[in-house]
Amino acid sequence: RNSWQLSGSTNFTDNNSNRDLIEFSNEYAWTRHLTLLGRVGREVIENSGINADDSPTLFWRGGARLTPGPRSSIRVEYGRRFDDPVFSGDAVYRFSPRTAISAAYEVSVQTDRERLAENLNNLVLNDDGILVNPLTGQPGSPNSSEFDFQEQSSKEKRFTVALNGTRGRNTFGLNSSLTTRTQLPANTDETILTFGGNINRQIWPDLDGGISASYSAAT
Image (spheres, rainbow, N blue to C red):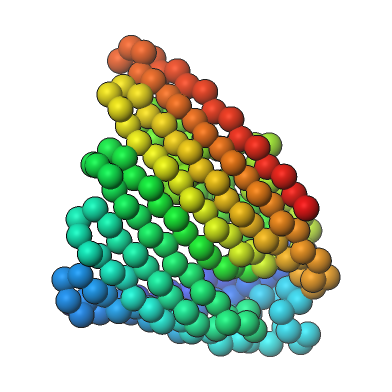
């Protein structure tokens, strides 16, 4: 009923945006439908603008994951990190074994190289052998703003909604995201709104075809 994990990482870059992180997380299954969540840690992000002297900062977060039934789950967590209160959560509802809608909200601080590497590494192969974002189902695009490279750290608040499904030999996905990105240490904000969709079909056992489209606007 109880599980825990201790993890740590160190990243070095040639522009001194180094990052050290150690984190302890714990999950306790209070009932079959309710799991209590908690985490605490310490991190240093050099040249991030979070604190002037790049000193270590402590963070914590607590919450719960509710599973009302086999079709749905909800996670809500609240804590303090990056010198601010932070909230995160996600929810999934499965209309059927092959169709689901999901939503997520997360706050993160990333160095330029971490953001680029994470977005590349997060792409996975779907059932049709296409590299896609696992949350949205949208095929990875090298022209996406997610793969922009910027020589600075940034704080991101991102809300995402996605609908993914399968009908016979067809798979489809619709998604939208709203991201507020604050460049550090300049504290300049940028808001990015993105819409996307894709549909794929297995034409023959060894041949798939598909089409995808996306639109993003920054202010």
